Length: 228
Image (cartoon, rainbow, N blue to C red; front, top):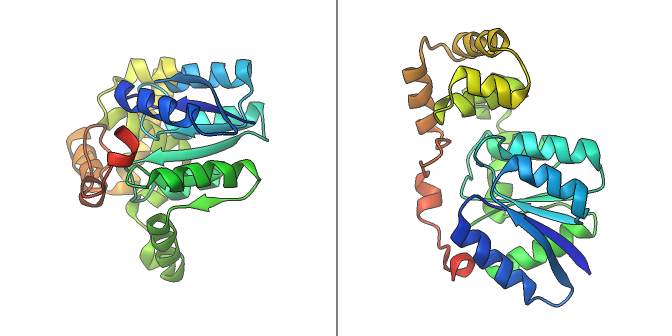
């Protein structure tokens, strides 16, 4: 029996995933939540085998949630399910220890297969994600984006800023002081060659990493297998 925790901030998709996976022989949905903070708590309490998780979550995002879960339980398998194909998400999540990365345009069969593969201790990537990572690797430095220059903490703070969170709110959620948040913010500006939050938001929109922003590729995918 594969024990699964579902982490998805859209209630409709979360419910659909729960109903779908509950009917699969050998699967047991242990719990579901829409936030990273609650996901970390439930992972400790329920000890799932596989966490099926979106990237963009309110408050603590998928990257930080992945880090915290794996620090507590290095054996837990985290399978990312998201609309985001573009960097920096795939590389950063896989570097953080995610066992797999699939998109919401995948078929139900692929998602089920991916859960079984990562539970068995192997890595699974959607074909489109694997191709993009391969192209980036083969192109060397020329394939890197501006966001690759950011540290994990800087990227996390950037994502929180461009998705509307205030400096004091970020400080509380990350357990650091506001001065540290601002120091990271100015380092981000310097590395990216920009000077303010407006330019930062425009850059984030170009990479499709705003909370309510979809990349062209993601918007063209068919999610009917997930939400019906």
